[in-house]
Every structure is written in C-alpha cells, then in structure tokens.
Image 1 (spheres, one colour):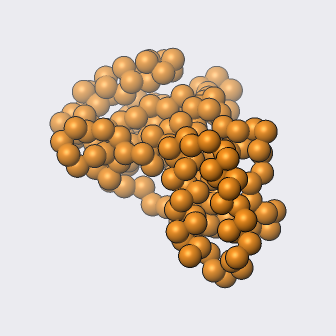
Image 2 (cartoon, rainbow, N blue to C red):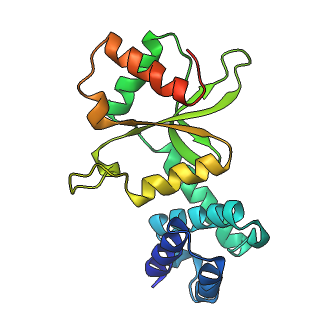
Length: 195
C-alpha cells in the first residue's frame, strides 16, 4: 500500500542505499492517487525527495511534481503544528538566561529544528542548530545510541552546511542553573559557536 511504499523509500534514504533502489520503487507511486497518501506517508516522501536531492544530485527529483508539492505542503503544515517539549523549553530558557538570541521550532534546510541560532552580529541564521533529543531519539537497549531517524535528520542538516549540536536528555536533566549555561557554552564552542 502507499504507506508501505513511503516507509520503504524513507528507509532506503535513511540507510543511504543506492539511488537505484529508490528509483526502482518510483513506478509504484503511479498506482496511488493523492487521497491514498496519509500525512505521515507524504512527510516521508518529502524527506525522500530532500535526501535524494542532497545526496544524489544527479537524481534531483524523484517524485512527480504534483506529489512532491503536496508532500512538501503537508510536511510544512505538520512543522507549523509542532509543539515544543518541556525539555526543549528548558534549553530555550537557559539560552535566554545567557542572553543568546534563538529561534524555536524553526525551519532550517527544509527540516524542522528545535532551535536555530542567528548570527549575533548580523541577526541572520548562523548555521547552528540545537536539537534537544529526548528519550524517543535514543535506543532503549541501554546504549544511548541515537536512533536512525534522528541520525538521518542530523545528516541532512549537516549536508546543507548546518552545524548540529545535540543536547541529550540524559546529559541535560541532571544540570541546574549555571551548570546548564556552562554545558551549552561548551557544546556550542565545539560547533564553533562562541557565546
């Protein structure tokens, strides 16, 4: 069905399989009309399109134009509907306390990011995003490895020149006050961002 096709295309891109595997599924898209696609499936198709455009530029367009347009629109609508978690807002408040301007739930490189940091001198986006990664971003086997969907997102951001700073929940929760500010300064310094 359409969701299985979307899942497979997204997975092939996340796992960095050859573009031939993705291109081989394209004829399957013609079996479905727009109402057959769920919002989740359309979002996955948008990420497939973005991934192929970035990682396989010789195959810049894999989706039919009308489907690509609807997929992008649905993905954008879902981004606008996103709400920040308490963990995310805690990091945002710490940045406020440090006097660091930032944008919450921002679109960077066609993806939703938790926090984007504008360049302090120009006010423009400075190429640094802070991803506040809660428990759903990590393996539950005790290894604390980032899951594939999060690594995929970070990879797509990095390929567009963004420097990604990950703030894992298990590192953030034990910190208080000035410890949080010190932690963020150290993380951002590693990404070349001084506060």
